[in-house]
Length: 66
Image (cartoon, rainbow, N blue to C red; front, side, top):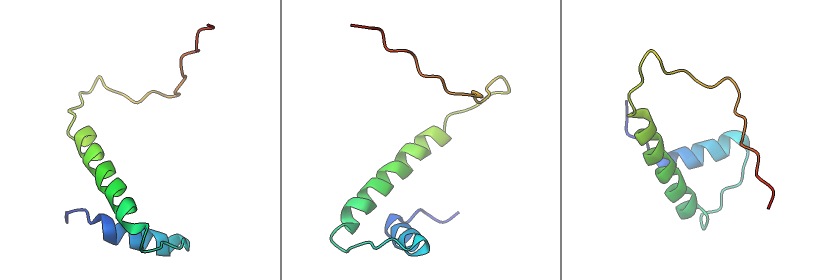
C-alpha cells in the first residue's frame, strides 16, 4: 500500500465533491489530515481478539446535575 499523501488527498477529495480549496488553507488541511492519519495508524495497530466486538449503539453517559 502506498504511503498516505495528505496534500494529494486534500486536493483530490476537494475536487471530487466540488469544494473550493484555497491555497492559503492547504497547509492547515494537510497538517490535520496527516495528524488524523497518524491517529488512525495507532488505532489500527491495536490487536483485537475474537472476544472484541463493536458496540451496537453508542449511548453517552448522562451528565449529572450540578
